[in-house]
Amino acid sequence: DLGGQSGLRSLWSKYFDEAHAIIYVVDSEHRDRFQESKEILYELIASSQLDRAPVLIFANKQDLDESADADQISTILDVRAAAATAGHVFKVLPISAYTGQGIDRGIRWLKNEIQNSPRRAVIKSLGR
Image (tube, rainbow, N blue to C red; front, side):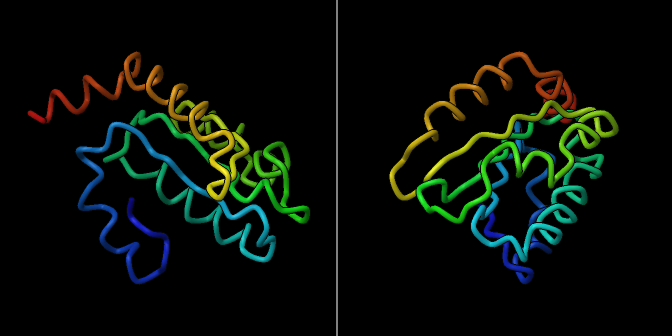
């Protein structure tokens, strides 16, 4: 967990080489931050240090009425275009960190993707 505040983002790259996957959490209620979230996501997946890492995007706060749903988040983040250009496999799932709804499903998907991911070979080649 590498918090998303701008002051912490400079630390992220120190962990990229050993990352087997990316879990990216979007606050689905704060529509005014969607563009910033998209830009940050694209910066992450553009990093060669994260080459071919599976990307699980949690559309959080689905327990709140005003939240964008997972399909809307997928469209806003333009996940199809990102997947096509970055060589990552993506999944966007609705969750509520408050109630726990959807988290298990996401972790099961990610576990399967990590086990079958070419990223494992990348990490192995780095001696990790």
